[in-house]
Length: 75
Image 1 (cartoon, one colour):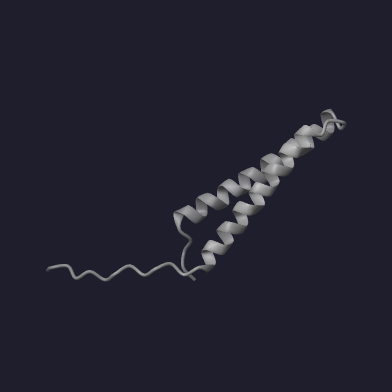
Image 2 (cartoon, helix red, strand yellow; image 1 turned 120 degrees about the horizontal axis):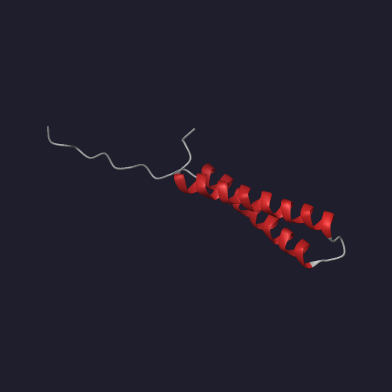
């Protein structure tokens, strides 16, 4: 299996950060003010974005990358 591209690694990292941030916002909001809905909407948006980025990174690792052309170098 080929190693993932730097773009895929960055996408996976951003997805993980969005997931953790969304869950953290939700947890903090529940402990401080359980009646407010706006922070939970933000948390849901962040979690959804994180899941989407992680799925996109997983799909992009399944796609074959184009092969680099072989270039003859003069010796």
